[in-house]
Length: 71
Image (cartoon, rainbow, N blue to C red; front, side, top):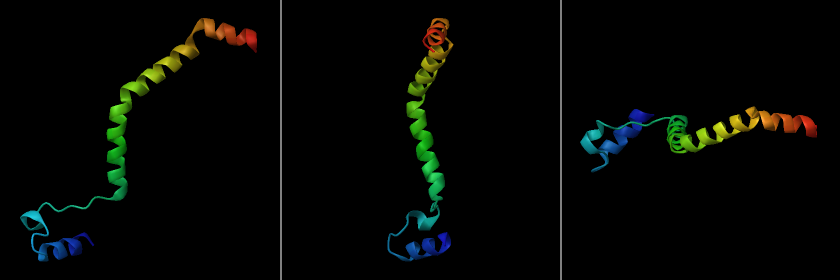
């Protein structure tokens, strides 16, 4: 299917640059994965801080004692 699309675009005037030498169609799920990975790179520092805060909150001795008294 990709080759058929490429050949049709090459037939059009100025349909593809360099006669389609650099034409490539990626799978939708691959493109979606690339988008998500870039988004995670942007959010990684914030996510790391959230994880660290959760670890601190769960591991704090005073919090553990407080939870034992209230439960």
